[in-house]
Amino acid sequence: MSAGTEIPLVERVSELRDAVEAARAQGGSVGLVPTMGYLHEGHQSLVTRSAAENDLTVVSIFVNPLQFAEGEDYGTYPRDLERDRKMCAAAGAGLVFAPSADDMYPQTPITSVTVKGLNAVLEGRVRPTHFDGVATVVAKLFAMLGPGRAYFGEKDYQQLAIIRRMTADLSLPVEVVGCPTFRESDGLAMSSRNVYLTAEERPAATVLWRSLQTGRDAVVQGSRSPDEVEAVMAAVLAAEPKASPDYAAVVDAATLDRPDVLDGELRLLVAARVGRARLIDNLGVDCARL
Ligand code: AMP
Image 1 (tube, rainbow, N blue to C red):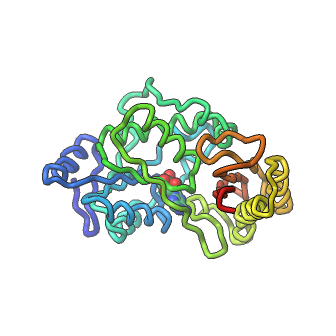
Image 2 (image 1 turned 180 degrees about the vertical axis):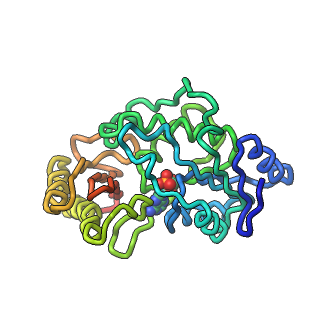
């Protein structure tokens, strides 16, 4: 372990367990915040929550090759470990775990965690191998650390649903905590990939949030037709010349199934490319509370 001025950094999987065991031996609870780094206030909100609820908060920073397909941005994903360490320390983390890909995957894994069905809809249609990579690395992180709680953002809503289901199906002794999406003042969900947006593209990126709000307004005003709600969301996306939409969908918040008639807790989800950035966002609507 190398102790920087800000926060201890563990880079070797073999050293992680000892570092975490030391905290646990003193009766401490351990919270995990898995990230790919290039942190922002959204990530920090997860760290703050974990630090408030656990004695030791570990932030993992790992750009996971398994969840990127050929042609995606694995090689160019933004990285700044020193800045990330400062942000982790400022938010109350006790340890940063930043392994190399070789250390994480000493041999090409032939074991994979597949959360069937949930991995194939929405993002899974566009990125068919993505969620198996996510579930596999999160299962590995759970096994390496043995956290009592792990914190995930609603920003990646499908990912959160998949991790919850994997944890339940495999009886993993981890409480999965979902945390609300942090946004810029104009509504754009914070994302490490926002750095790809040029100054001209940046205003256009709010189209995802505008689309979600339009969809929610339609439900609030009484629409119970998924086709109708998706159509108004898609129209907002289509009206932005700098955006190439992937999908605009309304699903059941728990199952991610598309209902015939809108009812109960819903989730509206959108994805679009703006310039080099592929952006996703989502918003909840509870019909029972309208
Ligand atoms: P990432 O580094 O993008 O893999 O994200 C790491 C964790 O931070 C995931 O659980 C994300 O859902 C969460 N996260 C990313 N952006 C936000 C945001 N704007 N608000 C809240 N959580 C976020």
